[in-house]
Image: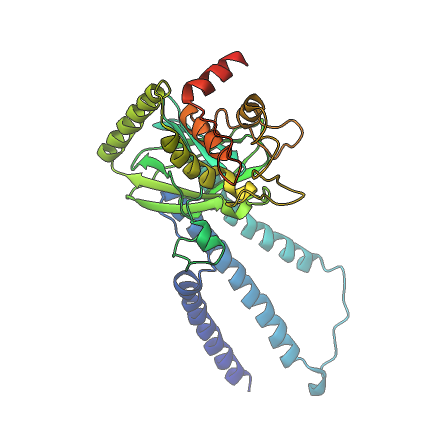
Length: 381
């Protein structure tokens, strides 16, 4: 009888082992409940460490519960066995102390190496400052004039269930973070308002963005591709609308993109002195409003009663122009939810969105604000 049970137990253990391997593959490929293997060396090392510790825990669980269930079955009361009465066994206490300690030490060796690699941000080829805002990301390429904001680009019609949702729903942006492949990139992560968290699973990067502090992380992507993530810290009303898109490209393509961004920055500064027509400002202002302002004030300008004030008929949008300029550029001292957009938007975009707000939603103020007006206002502050 005992030999028969031993054979049954061995078959059961082999079956469970095969099932666990199959479950791992299904978890990754079909169910999506396991960690991603990632596209960087650190990501893959982290995944391998995760699976190693997981299988060690599985083996311990199978062994412990196997022995327990076997003992309960083999020494059950119906067969006449009586429980042994003993305590303070030095040998048993040594065994159950030494064996777990040895297991933990063996687990700590690969874990310590992986942690060392994760925190080794030295000798980076490129530094990028990442700043979290409600609810967008700002990227500054240190050592160049390239800086821009990355906003959610999912159409409001999809968010409001007026159109079918695309595969990257709430995970698409107007300006992705472009980085070169095969280069060590150091991220300096902070926040402007509340706590955020910059998280891209495929890169194995997840760091809190805390106002007043700078956290560091790094990555080296070996193959071109687009990798998506999102804010992983509950940061307010539109926390779920704060995605991250990283676009990894070959060095030549990255250099061309960087040169183009520098040229665009120069062109934008030149546009500050240009005089735009009302129609040009209104059209551009509508785009800026829907991209930046509509999340709080709503696409129809009616706001959220008791939370976010309306633009339609508001005292700001229909009152003195200087008050309107001040609250958009410097933010509100009364309502912290109204951020300062003086650094977030260019003079052209600020002029356009104020022109739009003062003439849309039935306000019809007839004002036209030029970029040079914004520049002069900033200089007076």
